[in-house]
Image: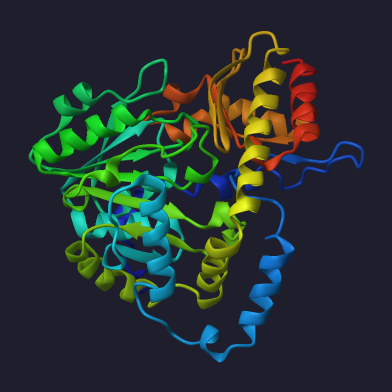
Amino acid sequence: MSLSAPMNPALVASFAPPVMEARGWLEGVAFAPDRPLLNLSQAAPVDPPPAPLRAAMAEAMEDAQTHLYGPVLGMPELREALAARTAAIYGGAVSVGQVAITSGCNQAFCAAIATLAGAGDAVMVPVPWYFNHKMWLDMNGIETVPLPCGADLLPDPATAASRITPRTRAIVLVSPNNPAGVEYPPALLEAFRDLARARGIALILDETYRDFHALEGAPHGLFADPDWDDVLIHLYSFSKAYRLTGHRVGAMLASPARLEQAEKFLDSVAICPTGLGQRAALWGIHHLDGWLAGERDEILARRAALQAGFQRLPGWAVESCGAYFAWVRHPFDLASDALARRLVREAALLLLPGTMFMPSPADGAAHLRIAFANADAAGIDVLVERLAALKL
């Protein structure tokens, strides 16, 4: 009898994709026509890009260059436009040589880690964490060092300092946060920048949801530091801004020396980002500022609607809420992973349990993540009504 080909043990030991696991709970469940499933599990715009952008994309499809391999680090025009946009938002100087376009923000994170760490190294991540970050670290044999947060869901630089070891290569922050929605104050981000610089490690800041920040103006001043790229690796996504999730367009901003190394990784994985998605992102930067401002206003209105709605739910508590997400405490004597499965059948709701975002299932047993940006005000009312009617 022949032996099976070996499996990578680090990959085997990593957990299954949580969103796909949650979708599996829908198998065999029939939803009544008057009570359709309300899916608030994955953070993704449910509507297509605006009509003018779709028209621009259709025009781009007629250009032969759209369908060819492009530069590994992305279209120079898009890199230049994002450098200028970033400098305009945050102040300071950002050059085209400090910008790489990637196939989504997840790939930007993977590329950043590839330049920083390998098996046996360690990366610090606040909890609750974004599960895809944890998965990638696990797959590469990199230790994820949990950084606990307080009741306000903000990480503490002093606690982080006490957990840095010679194996630590980076601290990862996501703001506005996934999964908790919390927005990190500028002074806190600057404190983490100073800590990382003092200890000779990187600060990876994922701002996928930057365009929906409640703060007017720049979310922080990190780019105003003339030496920002000696410590900061900044991640961004066009997917949420312009409803381009299926086209996978993200970005990594870092030193030219780091991007030179990231280019090796990106060339080996995808060769280049999608041409159509990049052209769409470039068109969006030049033409959709007013439209994007309206999108932000709508997300902030949905945030307010969710906070107001949960005030009508005895026992429930919104512990943090921002951008696309709410992190809520449920009132039931039931772990959130079991509760989330029951919500599918008993309330036609698909939410993710807090257990998917924590080092151990027990840590997230009392919480659910709600991707409230997927629902309009009427949908949020439906969510609240169905939760109020639960009898568990």
